[in-house]
Image (tube, rainbow, N blue to C red; front, side, top):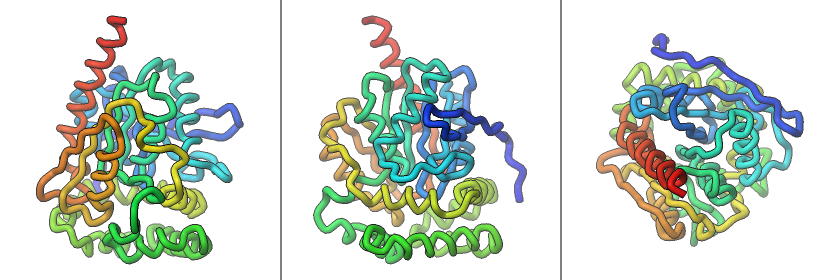
Length: 307
């Protein structure tokens, strides 16, 4: 496979409950800090997609593996609101008073949870094609395009073993039949996503991030998906900070109606719809997302200093 331009060293932090938190940094190592939440069945290695733009605009991306994923310890019975606690611990360790949060796809839920839990610490919140609180929308499964995702959303609580078996099979395919796994992306009904998957660098990063996700098996990713489709434990209306959302109009993975619901529910929220784009556009075009994040960081920091 293709050799990547930049390989970030893996770092570890021991949390107060003695769990290991594994993370990598991308972008400008002296820039404004941003905690990036990876996709469901993804990992910290996704930061590679944003490295070039983050370095250009002066952002320091902190990409954490969630519990049971990559190199981070599994946390039984974790909830969405456990994530901000890990962010705070690592931020304090790295001596960040204020920072931004960003999340893509399933990672959007964790960025929104952080926005709700610790608004006083945040400079901005950016969500890329993120999920919404699935339990708070009418006929939620009718919004989902994928038949597999519909099955998972309907049965993850009643039949968790089926989800685990599905992810076990996915893990085996990634580890033993990588070409077959990558070929499955070509069945995506989004023309733009199929086109993006022809890019060898994109295929390499996606494969590495999902290899990392299943490094310790499927238990962590299974929990991640279950949390995504469960009640989040907070109301979107409680989010006090400004939120910027980016979503491709032709996304067949996370329906744009999820972002529309977030926009309608979050008091100060802006939805940017990208024409002719699917779910994978951040792999090749995230310049405007990172630039806006950098601008929002600078504006917020100036406001904090003036007070």
